[in-house]
Image 1 (cartoon, rainbow, N blue to C red):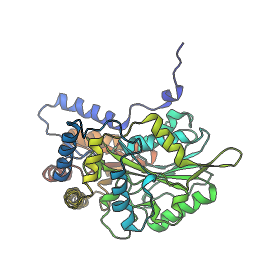
Image 2: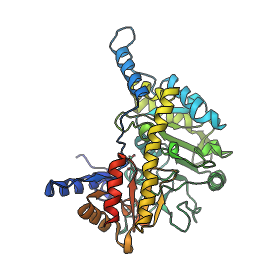
Image 3: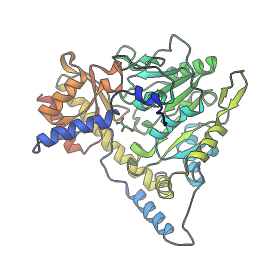
Image 4: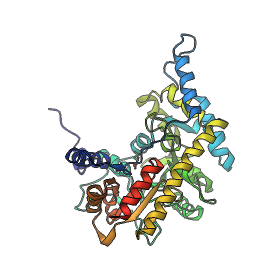
Length: 408
Ligand code: MLT
């Protein structure tokens, strides 16, 4: 008899974004004339930039010729892309990352979901609350938790509330934890963590032999100086942190798929007897076994983001989204909403009016304004009473959405 991994049965309802899509589709079917504006899932709307398109065309042409076609590539990614990442993303910031510490993948969702496999199931996981649901669900699937309570909090996970009071940067946990997920600029709140705040976490991880999984998928959206783009800007972070980056939002690759994880060679985890084990070869081993690399086309396209033209073109698209974010902030504040984020991240975190439950506010926005957001409660118990709006849409649609919300 085939038995099921019962940990999967602990997962609550569906994954957040398909659940929203389901509700929106039902509403659209009942109201075919409604012009729905989607500011829910953070999915890009602008086309790929010309430098990327040209690189993809060239790559397709190479694949069309016997002399230049490519079969399986290196599981960890092509050298040309790994080097471009080091030389453009890290070295100019004075951050030491070696080319062979970069692991190219097909997405940060997969990377942040898969990374936990390398660590024992009895590790204690700490997550911010609200949180990108992937960090939690993948640990549930792996068997690191008990069941969820009626607020959706799984037994065994340490939830670190991120609230207006702590400006959405969590305090250190009151109990020992081993695996710490941090995401800055933050999804969903749009908050950032300062160098000093990250230093506290790095010191904690060193003192407690913990590992930080730092999701920097939104670093390209930072507009203010002095905001760290990488956890490795903090001295000592190489000893305790893995960092994730993605081309999804940075370069509009949600439909192309390309991302990376940095696993420093000095990073250690421990056997039960206290013997140190290098994490880097474990992740490399896992990649070789379970992954045949992101496609050559995606990697050639990603490398084009680092050309002079690519950089400039991508910068303009990011500016368009961040102009949206600025406009949204202003419009919502003028309409009397309390709003966070949207300055260094493409997400705005809105307090629901009159203390409404976030799914109720989601429904009200959908029904009355035909605007889709993401209910804060979908990101965790501490997200209740908030709603996330994404700045990824065409400016005229965003403006219209804001006008509709002001009339709500
Ligand atoms: C989000 O809306 O939070 C993201 O688009 C989801 C993702 O990147 O997987």
